[in-house]
Image 1 (cartoon, helix red, strand yellow):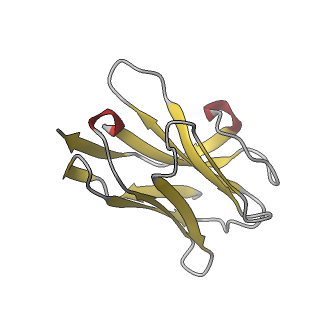
Image 2 (spheres, helix red, strand yellow):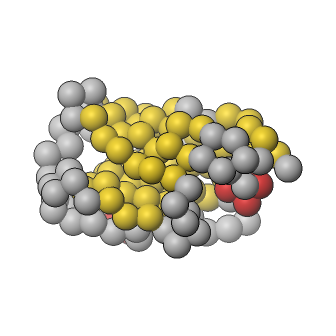
Length: 125
């Protein structure tokens, strides 16, 4: 089965850091992109970041503003999202997902077809 498993969420104070992991099974990254998304209660799911395994490029939502870094480890079939300078408004369930198409990058959720189960990130003020 093709699966993604997100982990690493937790409770952290404002200004703190967390590193999320997204472990893939049943496929290799090849030319896919892996994206991170988040959804807060009552809000739409929004794109946080994505990394292309076609050319190594990375993309971020405007609200990230240099605070987050996405990276990938092909040997471990895992993608990471390092989140620094966390703010209370970063509180959400974070999901990782795989693009529907190879050699494609996007921060739009409808461009992704395989989703992990989500991990809760809570930032206290």
